[in-house]
Image (cartoon, rainbow, N blue to C red):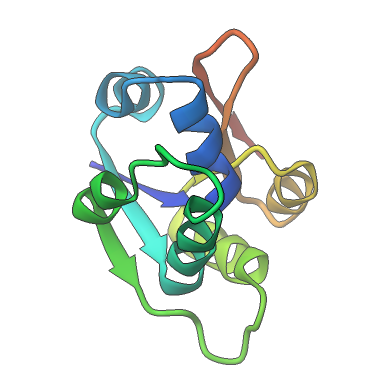
Length: 122
């Protein structure tokens, strides 16, 4: 089983692409164990007040919720740190976050225009 950190924009992109979570992740990393930081959960909850259909309850039921990292304020910092330390890819479409992940030896899973997931490693 592979840990996969979920970023807010990555989750939104996955839902908007109407991808099946299990089969899409299986194709990329095998069986995924989703990880959700508290601050990312709050971001997605905030977005869901404006954008319906984000399957927030599905996400929460399928994820291990992780406490925010002490000494870090921004979700991207926490995602980069956890990705680098644990070898967990981050589900994201954020261009800046993807660049920083690769620079720090992390990896990411992105939703492509072809409506599938792709793993990119440093």
